[in-house]
Structure formats: structure tokens, C-alpha cells
Length: 138
Image 1 (cartoon, rainbow, N blue to C red):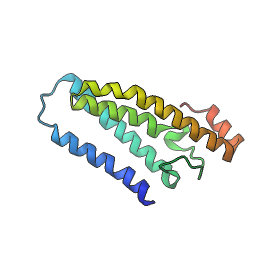
Image 2 (image 1 turned 135 degrees about the horizontal axis):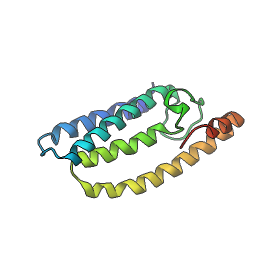
Image 3 (image 1 turned 90 degrees about the vertical axis):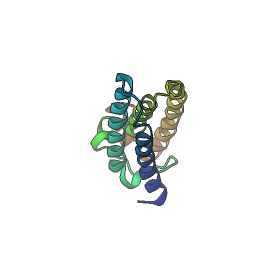
Image 4 (image 1 turned 30 degrees about the horizontal axis):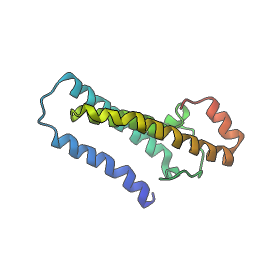
């Protein structure tokens, strides 16, 4: 695994664990508990997706290999998809509802990022990517 991939894989979960620990003494309400569940589920599936992507992971768009197994057999961009859940869960857990206003712009940015990646994958893998895209979501 290259350094940037290792950094991006390891640092966010460690930082989130630190935030969970830091905010552990806030009173527990259903919204906070819901946030923790969203956060844990989002991080769990995001981590699985990152592992399944293997050495095809990169910070910027690259087309090393077309990954179509595991979560990628159903969702073309599970890291982005589950990342939104994890971030929303974190905002709810730390009880900073105003931070949820950041989600729509993040989703829009992720949408444009997925389009750029899709163009690159289609250029490199052609019909194989188009067939994959036809049977998967987002």
C-alpha cells in the first residue's frame, strides 16, 4: 500500500475515535445514539470498501484496475456513499447540527468527483466499464 493510501485509510478512523472519546461525556439522547450508529456503520462499510479497492485506491482519479467485487458489485462508489453516512453520524454524535449544512455541498462535490472518475474508467476500460456501470448503483 502506498503512503498516501495508508495515511488516508488510517488517519480518519483514528481521528474519529479520538472525537468519540473526547465527546463521550455528553448526555445520551436518541439523536446522539443514532449518530453513533450511523458513524460506526458508515465507517465499517467505508473501511471494507477501501480494503476491497486495494492498490487501486488513489487520492486523485486514476484507472489502475476495474474493481467489481464485494461492495463494488452493487455500488460503484461505496467509499463516497458510506463516507457521507459516517460524516453525518459524526455531526449528530457531537451534537453539532449546524454542521449538517455542510453535507449538501460535500454530496455535490462527490457527485462531480464520481463523474470525473467515471470518464477516466470509461476511457480506459470501455465496454467493460459500461457493462459494470449498467448493473450497479451510484
